[in-house]
Structure formats: C-alpha cells, structure tokens
Image (cartoon, rainbow, N blue to C red; front, side):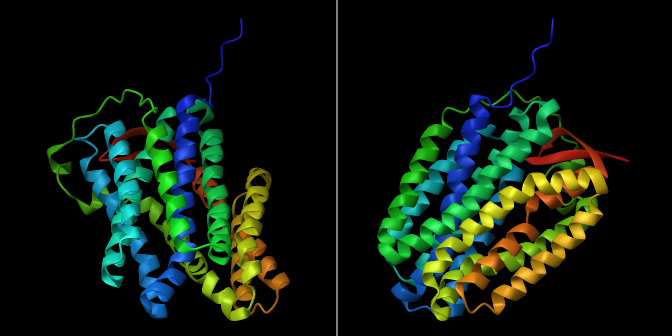
Length: 344
C-alpha cells in the first residue's frame, strides 16, 4: 500500500494565506494612497507625507521585535487574535481628525499591530506545512503576498480617482474585520517549548541577528528601500507626469511579472546555479528604476513596472539563500525561527 502523502492545502494553511493576503492588501492599498491623503486633508508637505507613509513600517518593525520578546509568554493563537483585533481597531483611528500629528501616531500604531500579526502568521504557516512540502508550501504562501502587492495599490489608486478616502478606509476596516473573524478558526499545532538558557533571557541584540543572514539581508534592504519609494510616491509621480490612469495598472503589471518569474527563475537556478540568475536580476531591477525615473509615457511606465517586478522577485533571493544552505527549522525561540545550517 502507498503511504498517504501529507496534505499541504489544509484548512489552517488556507486561512493563514487568506489573512496574510488581506493584511498585506490593506497595508499596500493605504501605503499607495496615504501620502496623497495627507497632502489633501492636512496640507502636509511632501516630506511630511513621506513620514506618514514611512512611519507605518517603523511601527511594523517595532511590532515584530516586541512579538519576539513576548511569544514565550503568550500562546500563538492568542497573540494572533490580539494582533488582528487591534489592527482592526487602529484602522478606526483613520476616521478621527485630530490633526497631522495624531494621524502619524495612528499610522505607527496600525503598523505596530500589523507587525505583530504578520510575525505570528509567518511562524504558524511554517509550522502547519508538512516538512516534506515546506519549500512548495512557502512558495504558495508567498503568492498571497505577491498578489496583494499588485491588487492593493491598484485598487487604492483606482479608488482615489473614482471615490473618496473615507470609502477606502471603510474597505480596509471591513477587510480587518474579516481577517479577525476567520483568524478565530485557525488551529495551532502543539509546540513543545524548550527551556531558555539563563543567558538568553531578557532582551539581547544577538538574539535578533543571525550573522550568516546579514549579506543577503543587506541586499534585500537596498532593493526594498528603492521599491518602497515607488509604493509611497507613485501616485504623486503619476499626477506630475499626467499618467494617473496608467499608474493604477503599474502594480498589476508588476504582479503579473512576479508570478511569471517565480517558477521561471526557480527552474533556472536549479539548472545553471543561483549566481547566474541573481546578478542579472539585480541589473534588471536597476534598469527598471532608471526607466521609471525618466518615464514620460504610459508605455515606459508599464515597461518599468515589468522590469522592477522581475528584478525584485523576492522568491529569487530566498531561493538563493535556501540553496546555499540546507536549512531545517527546529524551534521557534523568542518568536524568531531558529534555523540551523549545514554547509553544502
């Protein structure tokens, strides 16, 4: 008799992928429109509008760091629900007008709760995927992020042209409520927690940093830094170029390119090696950013989107890192995946 293969598409995997899609969708929808909202509603300068967009990421980072420190004391399911509930509640703050400073604080709190929720989701997804299907499962899970990356800004830019910002906030609130409700149906697998050493208790910087991951992390930092400027300012840039209608489709082209490149780059790396794919991808990404900076027509804007999409295909970087080390996830200590590497 054939042994039954472990299932990948379980109820928990589907729910976590959906919740991840909704959260990233809301984040990117708001990020693509919030700068214009700050300028129109609060007469913010371009620099202040950038702060309104960027403070969200600072809040998300703070949320991730805090999650790592408290996950040993709170169950994953409880922490997930707390993150989702407060993510939804902080969206309500967008409806309150107490000036630009209050709005910036609201953005930070909203980002903080997103950081908590997405950190727990990333951990739970890895725990629910069968070990024999981990690479495949993480790949499919990443598609939820890729789709949200395109659809979120697309819907956001479309709504800024055809409706008001209040309706944008209502849509985000509804998605937050849906995420919270379906989050209650996640079943968390039992995790045997290891006793922490005395030296590891409390906040330690070395507990948050894996030296072997620094080089690839630095590359991702540079590319994400560049792409975040596109996310935050594409709306204002398109208005300046008189290409506002085309801007809505920028992220659709980006997402389609990412989804096409995902299996294509994986097969190439298997056959010819990661370096022969990684370095050309960096060049293509740079060419896309350069073309975007000189765009003067709809065609060049969309071509730039395709080039950026191919070059910034994050799965490429993750695959490069995974192929250079045989990695096995052993235990989640302090909410951070502990990965032990065996040199190839």
